Amino acid sequence: MTTFDDREKAYEKKFAHDAELKFKAEARRNNLLGAWAAEKMGLSGDSVAEYQKEVRRADLEEAGDDDVFRKVRADFDAKGVSVSDEELRAQMISFMEKVITEIEGE
Image: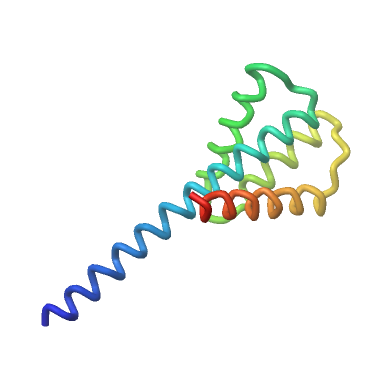
């Protein structure tokens, strides 16, 4: 019976570890996305850091990336920034790939 208990605990630890890595990766991706979007909107200084926080907060609204996408898309539209949906999604994917590589290297 202890073999099964040990296996169960190992799976639980792996699940928790994977969830933590996913959270870190998404937070880092959102930071990069926020900085990129802030630059596109002409923000600078403290405004960039504040916008990055807003993007990270937006990711807590629902599961998945659509909440972040909608937030940045709406901000681009409000500021008249010409970035296509495809370019925005491509940046999100690119930043996620970058942070995953960074995390794996740590």
